Image (tube, rainbow over all chains, first blue to last red; front, top):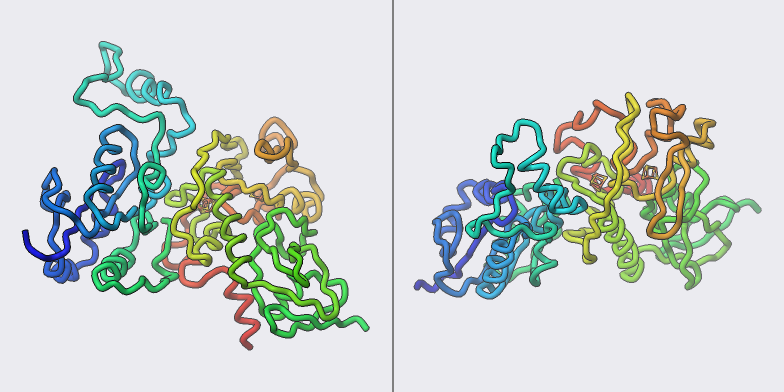
Length: 182
Length: 234
Ligand code: SF4
Ligand code: SF4
């Protein structure tokens, strides 16, 4: 393994919009690729951790047990864990189900809603499908999170500023225009 | 003498006797954050975001009147911390999904959070079950975003000469109630002041959401309070 700091990223209950915003740093991604090594991430499609990581970036909250397992792995393998985007921070759109009982959500999705074709009238319940949690949890309600970058998605400049700060050891300058919740 | 002189964070401020600290500060170009206070509506001192220390005691600047020689503290680390906590609590006790809220970019709660540099609330989210009243043809009321500031209650009575809104219950169960089975059963009009004074996306006109593009909205570039502070710089 090289001596460059390693970065891991993952999308839990997110839409990949935050990852798109990471790519939105444009040509700076070349600089990033020179400065860091990507560990497990949808960018290289590694599914397991290769080595200890300096930074873990988590998009999305936890809506099922697999999300929780992955998040715990990220905590275990990463020195600094970042909640990237509103879903990681407050559950976001998936958390709109949080005040509706889980059974009602499943019935609506698989049995009752208009246009559903489900002749056996069953709610999927296969061992291969991760079990849904009673509600969607923001990441910091599951493990300790060190940094938060809000936004839906967060501005690429905010992501860049945080990465530069972590890699250089200098604090992030407050930046009004790049702190947004939408 | 109808004039009094006092200080806010060491800056000398001249005010009219009987004026509230908040009004005097506004006139002097000093921004004291607030949510429930609004222009000439009778202040009710309920949100406590405008808490300041007056001669060492915490007071709500929107209801406390000025006194000769008073020493007012506004931007101390302690008070900023209190205000941040209040804003944090307002976020977690409702359902604030800014990413699709029509008020985003114009919302005073969100703008205060931006100004305070809040990246994530430090309290657990409650995700309460709240109603959405879409019955009115031109206005909707989304209780998920209501912060119980009471602006609409007071504006409906004092400015519109109606009585469309009232609070019912107390404590954690306190909620806004309309004077009828639903909003459409009241005499509320879309042009009523009660609708336009809501600081958040709770009481909103229909079909005007997202009119202003991202980047050109009220608080996209400039923080809340900026207009008041500009006055002070002149
Ligand atoms: S009312 Fe304000 S804080 Fe709440 S969701 Fe809308 S923009 Fe966000
Ligand atoms: S609807 Fe708006 S104005 Fe009325 S109490 Fe709720 S937040 Fe305040």
